[in-house]
Length: 322
Length: 294
Image 1 (cartoon, rainbow over the protein chains, first blue to last red):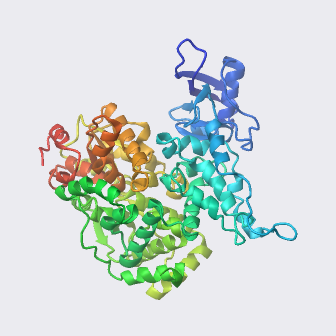
Image 2 (cartoon, rainbow over the protein chains, first blue to last red):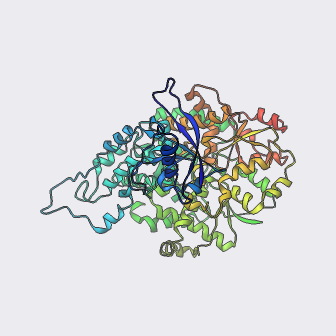
Image 3 (tube, chains in turn yellow, red):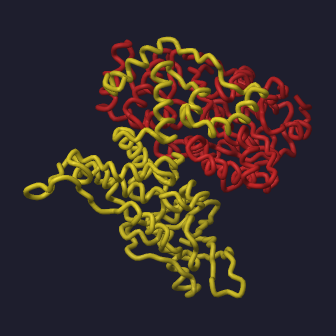
C-alpha cells in the first residue's frame, strides 16, 4: 500500500530555521501503521528526517505526535484509517518546543510531573508492618497508572496552549494517582496537603473541561475525569474557598432547589459575594447585558415538580449534604 | 416530525435570542417541538464534577419523560448534547441503569434505555436532510464566509457521540453552512474550547481562548462565526470586546447561533432572529446578506 504523508519539518541548523511542509510517499504493508510509514521515509527517502520511536506497540510512549491535527501514538494508528482524501498529515506534538522535525523537548512536561511530587507521602504513625492497600483501591487506580507519559494529552491541552503555567492533564492525573491511593496522606487516606497545593492557581480548577486529553490519551487514562475527581476530593476535604469550588457548589445548589440553572446568581456566587473588586469588574458586562436584553431572568422560577429533583439529590448524595 | 424539546438553561437565560429563533425555523421545517417543562438541567458537566451518579440520574429522569411521550429528544445546546450522550453511554450498562432507576421509582419514572438525544444540528443532517433544508432557503448567504465553531461537548469524547455509526456528524456544521449558501472558513480552532467553563475561575485564560479563535477566523476572512452551542456564544460574543482588549487588537466578528444563520437564509428578519441582542455589531453582516439592519 502506498501512503502519502504531508509532514511538518524543522531544521534548527538551517540558515533560516522555520517549520515547513514536505510531502512523501511510502510503501508499507496494508495493515501498516503511520509509524511504519514514517520509518520507511527515514530509511528509504531522507536519512535526515528525525522522529522518536522505540517499542512500536503502544507501550513506550515515544512516538506521540499530531496526526491529522490531533495527538496520538503513530504506532497505534493504522495508516489506512488515517487517510483524509488520500493523505495523512503529521506534525510534532503541540505545547512543547520542537527540537527537530517530529522530535520535541519534553522538559516542561517532566517539570510538571515532578511538581506534583509523584511518590507516596504517608503521614501519621507508621504501621507495625507494611502499609496495606485494598485490592479494590488498587484496581480503581489501574486506569490512571496505565499512563505511559507519551505527552499526547499535554500536546492537545487547550489551557496549556494559552497558559504554559498550567500543571496540565498528565501531571494532574499523576497527582490523582496519589491522592486516591489509601497509603497517601493522613490515616484516612486523605491527602490534604497535596489537595491544598493543587487548588492553587494553575492547578485543578484551571482545567476547562474540553476533553481534548480524554480523546488524545492512547491508554484510557482519561486525565480530565481524574481532574474532576480531584475537584470532588478537594471540596470533600474542605477546600471551598476558590472560585472553582464556589462555582460547582452554587451550580449544584441552583439545580437542587429550582431544577435548573440560575445564571444571574451563579457569577457573583462563584466570584465570592464579598469579592468587591471582582464584582465591580463584572459591572460593565452586566450593564451591556441589560442594554442588549440579554440579562437572565431576575426572578428565577422553579421548574414544575422541582421538589422531585431535590429528592434525587437527597437520595443520591445522602441527606447529610442538605 | 415530532420531538421532545430540551432547550437547556442558557437559551432561556443568557442567550434568550436562541429559543425563539429555534422555534421559528422549526416551524418552517415542520419540526414539532413538545416541551418537557419538568425536565431538569443536565448538570452541564459541573454537577458531574461533584457526583457523576447524580448527574446521570437527572438525565435518566429526562430520558424517561421523553420515553413516556414516545418521542426522541431534540436539544439546541452542544453542552447539553454531550452531557446527555455521555450519561446515556454509561446507562447502557444494565446494572448501572437499574441502580439509577431505583432513584427514579418514587416519582413513578423508569428509564428503559431507548432515548436517543439529538442536537438540532444532527436532526437536520440525519432526519430532516439537506434537500428539505435547501428547499426552504429563499435568501442564500452567497458570498458570506462563515467559520464553524462546534463546542467541545458535541465533538468529544468520540465514543459517547457515536461517530462510528454517524460519521456525517463530524462535518455536520460545514454541511449546514454550504446548504444555506455560505462559504466555509475552515480553521484549526473550530473544535477547540471557547473558554467559557473557566470564565469565573481564570478569566485571563478564558479571554485568551476567545481572542485566539475569533481573531484566527477573522484573519482568514470570516464574516461571522456560527455555533450550535449557546455557552460558546456567550463567551465568543458577549466577552469578545474584553478578549479583544486583552489581545490588544480589534476583532469585531459577529457570532451567530446556528438557527439564526439558517433563519436568515430562510428569509426571516434580523429582528425575528433576535440579532439586536448581540454584543458584537451584526449590521455589516446583515448588509452583506441583504437582510437590512435590525
